Image 1: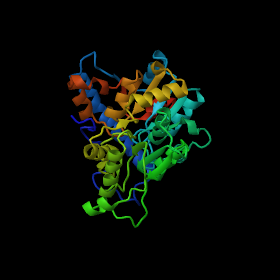
Image 2: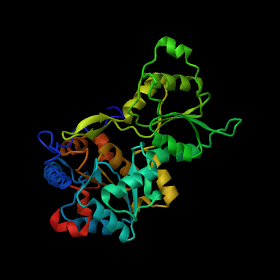
Image 3: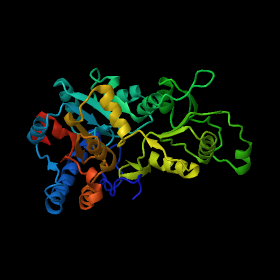
Image 4: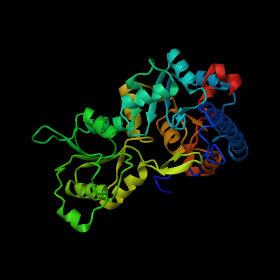
Length: 375
């Protein structure tokens, strides 16, 4: 299968028809997420108990006491959380997500937020989490590990050459947030968001006449760009052609995200990366989950021990694979992309063992003590 392919199924829709915003409150949506994750857990339990060998069987968490025992028995001190699909969906917090984060921090655990979303700066991610989780004052910027930040740190570690102006030049396909993080890391940026009146297409004659004001580049970084178009693809392709030693870096290889009441597939950054790779004949370096580049940065910068760390996520191919490949424990929640069908598929495939989580529970509320009787 393609390295960019992810979940084989989709999360069941929250509503059988488009919800009326006047009728459904945030509390209604959270309660629906809670109930559907518990129902999905019942399906997962059946899959695990009937089609999984003892050696592959993940631990199924049914109560908060189960979770606390697991954490104690495995000496877990550090928690890495994916964000979308784990702590929130859109602007709605997952059940007891806020209480879970606040309780872990109050108990002296190290908590980090690790996302493949490269659209935001660390400060923007912190601001969103504070708002959605209603936990202002306890989150720190250095808890935020977004793939835009990681891309900048990775390029710094490569010690790229500087030009006569003492600058290292990076061309960007992506958002203002990605550009900002790379600039903060000390790079001179081209590309990013185009002016409003910039054409989206590029003909043969247009490309032949294009003056390439970007000049020489030392790296090209690709992050999700909702305005990605043929013109940007043409420019990126020729820049890589003209600069064969320039690094090609992907903030992540996610195939899609889920949006809407019926869990529609929104093409992810992996689709953009594939286009540039195909046109340029190059292979991108992935710095997002599940890459070893990311895990090495986290362990080195924050001084964590992998064996004392739990990665909590909703995707088998990124979050769970990342945790397992890095020597961490991995926890799957059922409020995002992965479903019982996905779990059944990976358990039947001997080549997908790295996607099998250490533990599974319906939602992050199972990590919160006081929610044990209200899960």
